[in-house]
Amino acid sequence: MEKQVYITEEERAKCQKVTDAFAELYEMEKIVVLDAGRYGFVELKYYKPPHGFEEDATFTDGRALFDALWQAWFDTTLYLTAKKMQLDNIIYEEVFNCLSKEKQSSIIAKKADFARKAGITL
Image (cartoon, rainbow, N blue to C red; front, side):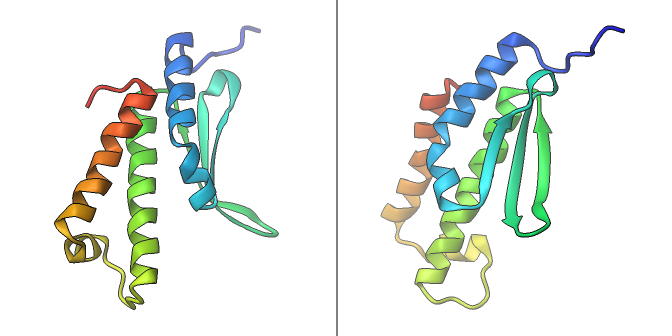
């Protein structure tokens, strides 16, 4: 019986670069991305003992993985910022709009930095 392969070697290399580019995210939040061999890359989010991770997603496309990790980084950054500001109702768009233009630009520029590290064209 032949084993089905769900990710090409080219996409595996792209996904690995994306995974490496977002290394700081894994320190910020309970998120990990693992190479699942022929199945692609698996993103595991929000570890809660004793049951494990609350969310998971499988990726076989580097750009889709990049977009998912960027969104996770962006949301986590705004969440942590809201906590520092002691905001009770955390709506990411409102938190972002409360930031100075300089801080907003810094956050948005981070996407280009991640893309450069991952070899992704925006």
